[in-house]
Length: 269
Image (cartoon, rainbow, N blue to C red; front, top):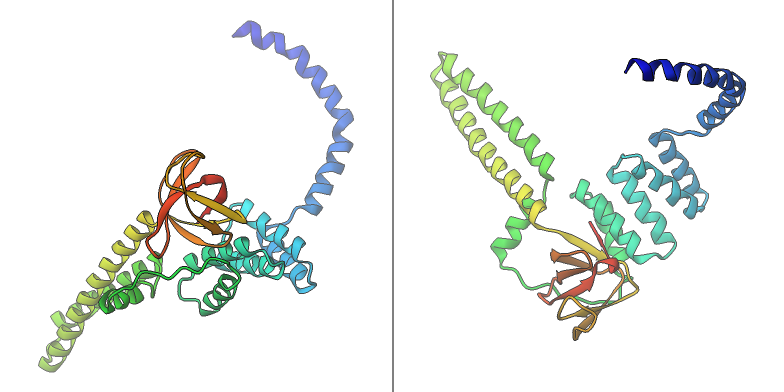
């Protein structure tokens, strides 16, 4: 160890001499990159400015830079969907609207634009019928995201705790009766909300959806090119991924049809 340290000293000195000559260039490069570097918020605003000027290609580039920087939001995906929609890019617009809807499941504007984009798709798939109870259950479950149900659970349990304390320490009989009722109503709703949160988490883990990005994808009955063709899908169609390996994915449509598709033809949500 001592020899290696002593051996490096002349090189360090030589390097410091060369570095002194490079300081002006380094300062210039840092200033240039510093001026050009933009925060995710600035990139988002630049993308919005590009979009307002109908420069959709540049808008897409700036929105994608926000995502590449590790930031995401419903607004970024929504605007990406809009920019791609303006360029008649079916699959990217649907993909980004779906991503936005994952983050804001009750946003009606996102739902409306997603529906417009879906109207451009070729494949007409009729979902399997659902009974009334399941429709209601799914409608209630879709009211909030996982975070939304979690926050609602905390709020309701907080109300239960507060009302129960008031019930416990108050002397008035009428107050006791009222706060006892409110506290256990809040507890019941809180437990229901917690159940919905767990169900939403389970659904998120088990539901693996993707968008077909290939203009035309041949669905096979086996995970190989020599497999028999079952049907054909086109870009923008949403599918459920049942299983996947390196090259192939087994998918299911909303009408129950199943088959194998090359992974390269899909983009998982």
